[in-house]
Length: 240
Image 1 (cartoon, rainbow, N blue to C red):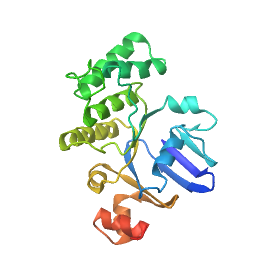
Image 2: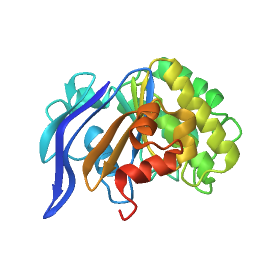
Image 3: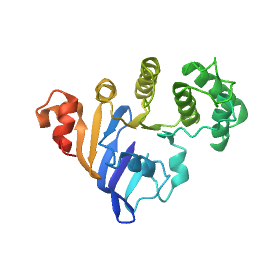
Image 4: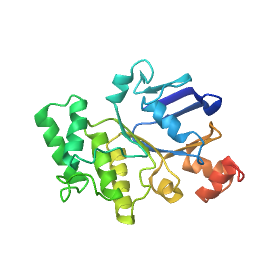
């Protein structure tokens, strides 16, 4: 479970996130929505311990992201907007490296790598260097790397950006599998159809503040809009 309480982040005079409180539960897929510059990626970066909050608190499975970042890192898998893969390593080597960073022992790690290669359909390119991979192949490797240590919480920053239809469909199935396994999935997206097909709950951020949190059905009821895009615009404002 992920929980934020009064989370704030300033970059100089710029207030990127302002007093944000929200949660994402186990066994659910929660979407983090908002226009560009709303504070989505900054929120995910604070939750993943990459940057420290200026104020407020955030917890992953009860562990504070500021005071106990190592415990948090062991419980999260993060797919950032930029995959950041090592191009000179193979897909397998990229995954193995992150498993070793998490302190996984050799035999369990190798077994886990094989299961991820099968799960993500990577056998065709698992031993090729990452340089020259398609965007879909890169996303698969980055996702495998993120979940190699079998984390309870998965954070995805616009995971389908640049993917073709088949790769998007495969990723959607994997996210739904995480939900079935009881994991907590929090992801940002601009694709409303994706949110409709995947999500239980929605968090909408605008101008650095949480404007809405609840189920998709509650969002539609509160805004009087059946179409998710129209409901989103009603919450954010058409001029945002």
